[in-house]
Length: 279
Ligand code: PAF
Image (tube, rainbow, N blue to C red; front, side):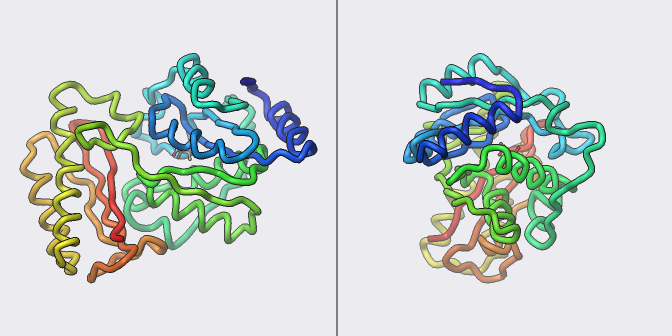
């Protein structure tokens, strides 16, 4: 496995592979990798070559968010990528990704106005801009994203369609801890008490999933059941609980196939997200 830092070096390695007829799968990450990322890398092995980028993107963090303290462990991440079978780790520097005169952004309307986009203004502008840049650098055939960030996945699909990018976006299921907590790099912020409290999120969503399976179609009913469970946990503070169309991210009153039920909850100071899509 190769590790490169420079944009032109990464680009020329991938160009050479493509010249030789290899297909390239790409897994963009912010590092501090866990089995959720591992499942993306594994799936990306359906290509001849796999590239993983590790870049904590300052553009997608708000002023009062956790950019400075976002967990980082590059050496461990490289070992992880090697174990999962990546061929190239691309770890660019902020100064090369965003030169002092940088002034071009990918700004999406519509899909980004609800859910995390409403709570984190500018977040998806940062995500779209960096992912568009990474796509331009790596030029992959396929790119892999986790369903835990369901809105991000929908936004990236829309961006690829709107900007006519010739890249297949592949969605991979949420990977959970044995007790149900969705894997996330931010879980590392939780102390023991918070880690236990965080289970309320997956528990509430599981309860809601059963309600829907048993026939409840009214969003308000399902949302209030989720809220009631989460509010029973003193360390939890709800950011949002929503039922939306899985493609447009618009609020829905009636739940149907492809409805996304999503929640963001603070456990102490740590903001966690989780969701399920109605089959
Ligand atoms: O999901 C993430 O880790 C990030 O939002 C991404 C897609 C790597 C862009 O920085």
